[in-house]
Length: 306
Image 1 (cartoon, one colour):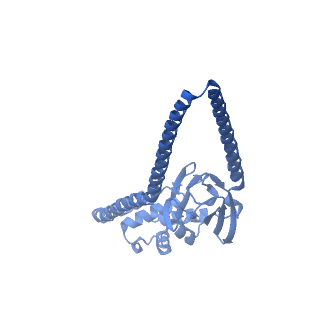
Image 2: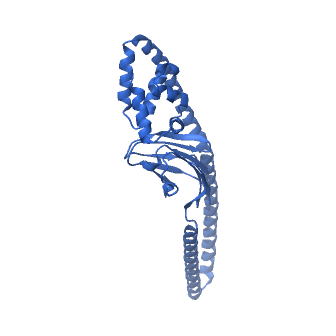
Image 3: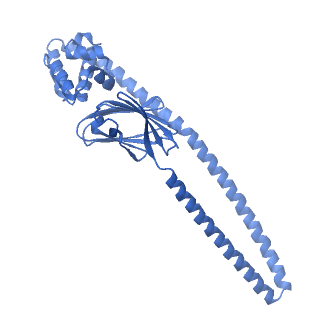
């Protein structure tokens, strides 16, 4: 057991992390990190948390967590195997119950977040259906009236009158077709012009140490964030509107996509290894490393602006 703290501390120093950096990434209090490095495991809340904190510490600095936890288990099992089992089972059951409760709450919240959109779509469909029904009914009435008028004219008109009516109908159809074509071309040009005018880009508005604030122009809301890792393990956390949407550690070659709630206009992204992390927001590649590429840990805040 005497080598666990030294091994973790050496890996942290090699990664270039301070204890404050590690506290920000892992969310483990600094006093517990110091206790782990000095192997004062009795200062931690309990044996369950000793294992959990060592595992998270190891994964953050790129070590094999299973090897370290195995060392810890072999050192403690000889002294009190029964007490370890009894003490670990109860926290584990509480953690599992909490996890299941959070999952149920998340599903419930996602449904209620989507409920306004579902209602709006249903109302739009009902309105369009009503408009279509009224238009179709008017069309049938007009067709029926025209047929009656045409039948009465046939009985009292000559063949020359029929030809004139045919020419008039043909002229109206041609005029309507040309008008529709002109409107379609005009709409297409306007759509192209609008697309060109709303070019998406990121602007740095402020910077303080490892904290950066950007404005993403050309978008009204954030819909999706994609992370890609290359080179080494990297921890990341994504929050929207003050609520954590995802956090975790990804290995090199791995990626993760986070779908954001409707109406999200502000993002906060924390990166534990920004040099190994690539970000794509709403399908747009975000080159944040151009603003001080020497930083490893950074916090990025982004707001949308049309």
